[in-house]
Image (cartoon, rainbow, N blue to C red):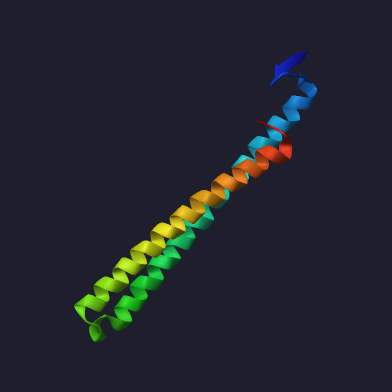
Length: 100
């Protein structure tokens, strides 16, 4: 059986292994993004919380607010970087297995 994909004729025997590879790679990426990245976010938050617990008494309210705002910017940047990396890895997998 022949399928037509983007103007090319492909044999089903050639297409199915690529689909399987794509699913395996996507599952791997999802596992990383569901375990490793939340862990990285939690570690960043825990570090901030620990620092505040140890040093909160010796800092002014303005310094605390400044550090909190900085922490929030760092967390947002970390999430944005993770999203970019996830998209990059998905594109790399599609390129690697030749699936569009």
